[in-house]
Length: 280
Image (tube, rainbow, N blue to C red; front, side):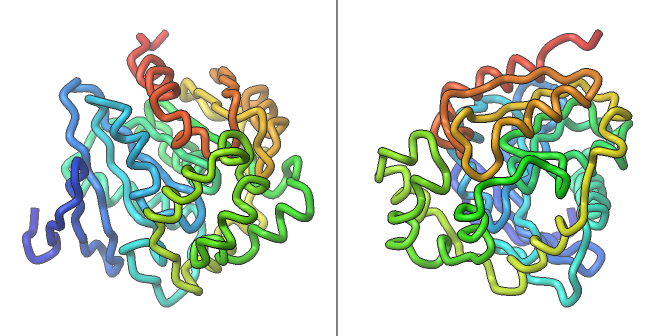
């Protein structure tokens, strides 16, 4: 890899790098695996830097993982112009090729990143082998959250004000976060607040987007995972996804929106098992 374009950082079990790619600068995390299976490309939620899903990555054990901070989030600078999910899908494909991944990959998307994962699977059907959709929806045509929840999602204050997150986090994220203040404090500890335009750009990327017109055309085996106490994305949306995608199965977790973190050790074996199933 071009050393001028890739600057390594210390990142624990993740090898974290800054990569310049076609005018974009991306902070990328790679955790090498030992299974020989395709790597897992992970798309994070809105405003979320890659550190927020490190508990899941650690729990996945020997699965190879590639994740990057969306432009304007974490360590990836905000671009001049807004983007769409199709733009980010193209960028992800180019990043994989840049990193030497020329074959198929598995894709996991959580919340906002679940919409991006659907777009990637739709645009690159031969590139995406298996698809995992966590705590997400088919886009603008969805069963919405309550207005009080949506109002708290519009702005990034929960990322910049730990006291505010402790106050509203339980009602916002549901599940274990309702009664475990330690989870909220740990969440705050790993947050790198998104820059203003970066958060707005993520909102704009999802504006008017829907996968419902082409969901039935997805051919990838798909695992739809959802918490039964998710105030942000009601469970009904997962049922819609599972019903519309031909090779989908639904796995419901007794938790809230952030079950991939709060139940990492419980859901990781489900994910590993799904990725290792023999294709029919």
